[in-house]
Length: 103
Image (cartoon, rainbow, N blue to C red; front, side, top):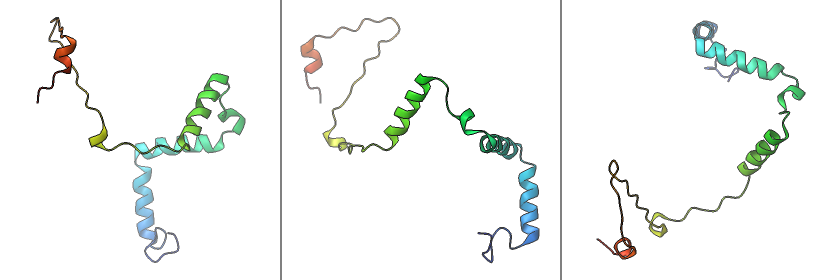
């Protein structure tokens, strides 16, 4: 990127304008401060102290690398219906009413 003819540092005026614009952006400054804090942090400070937090974090990270089965196609999935009573209305259906096909 820096060595390309149209890269960021090829044209000094363009690079200067971009850096000036970035320096005025408050979001960028906040992100840069956070990244600086993380980079300068000692590794012992970054590791969670709680055993439970370490266990949950390890489980989460390991789940990112597990083999996920393919999802079934939409046609093979069961349909779901939700009944929402209006206000305090009692909703009672018999098993036959619920199983009856109403296409």
